[in-house]
Length: 595
Image (cartoon, rainbow, N blue to C red; front, side, top):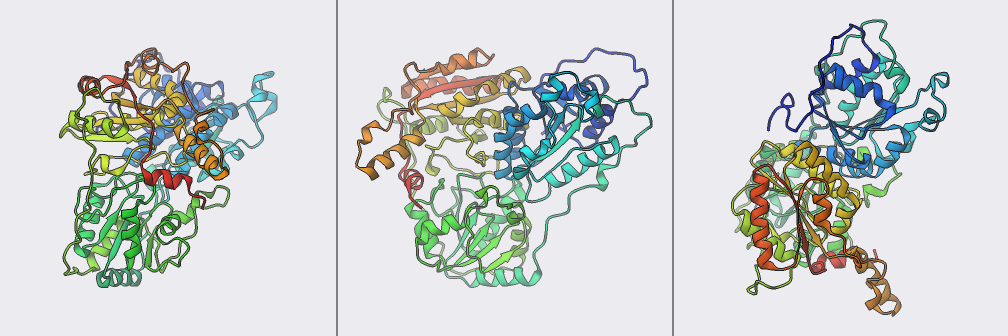
């Protein structure tokens, strides 16, 4: 990766001007953003932060942070969220007044549920009513702007002075990057931004305001957990929300191999363990499949590494019976549970709770576990999708996966997003950046923006960013693609286009069956057809290369070969792949279960 001091995206140079020596409030705010090493600020322009906008351009020269323009505030937050999923570090998203905050709120919720660090900067019309312009400043000023999103951010502030603004930014980054990570919001008064600084406000040293180091579990608890795992007959590791760290990845492999423990992973979060490893017990998914449910039910000791929805997963394996395994939970996630949103999921039974992030706990367990001298469990059978023999066969999502695997060969790929119709056997994850997980909050329309943010973070690396998304997600968020073209962010997006909000067709089928009504009507009110939107044309209209609709296997291989070559050369390509609708059985069962 290049450092934040290097411009990774196309940038317009500001015109040179003669500094008159006057310092404005927003100048000091911009200076603090630079000191905090915020490389990018994703913005949809708004008059409420016109002062800060001027300072970023004419005071800092649009460098560190560099502004990247979006066409909708939701995309600003989604891009910052996608960037954080690769780097684990925050960049900024600027939202205009109360209306921009309302636009961006769904993406903020996604980042909250996904525990992603995003620094959201907002602004309000002048708090001092005497300074407000008629009409517009009044409708863009609210009494307590942070109240709009307070339930799903870690912290918010509306500083009333420049020293308070500098401190708020320091605290915002500290809180956003302290586990469990999450979005924060700082709202700047437009009047404060546009005020002259009558005195010099020295910038605090960010090195003195860093987040705390990761929590370390008590020694006696680590020893107890190590003893249970070492003496277990059938230990299972649930590798959940972990970092993109290569050292953490290696530590998890070491722990599993020492214990000969089977490992399960989850498609709702990023790659956590090599899925081609013999100890990876079953293909990953959004829900347990029969094979993974059997492995979990037979375990006598389960180590949960911040597994997303531990209670729900145990219920999938054990049903209404009491959980018969000893459960070791490694997590600090409960610090973010506030009761407004149910994203905390069910309350799991836990026999030993290690108050820690997964990485430090695994490193300590590796110091204390003893090898289990048992034969390794048999490797899980995996049925890889293959390319149909008939090249004129209609496309399915498994076929898209098989063709893409063939086209990319051994080149390193980052799957920045996958559709709900994906299944774990379609692709092996061999590195923590092979797959980044989902959006957290299930907000349709997040895919394009998050894919762009991840591709921004990967630019300059050797990884090919590939997003596979559904057509509903694409249609809700497709104007985010203009930003990729404007900023020159290479990426490949494959739209798995079943011309339906198919997730809801499954739900409507379930209700119809339950009520003895015709399931053939499930498509009504769900289909994205008649007319079918021209997805490739939408991409071309925004300056990208758009290809499709592609309907046959032979055509897809040719198109993807050309698309990958174009992206490797700096291009941005969207491929409309028309696929047959359908989910794997575990996904369908998980979506339609009653409890």
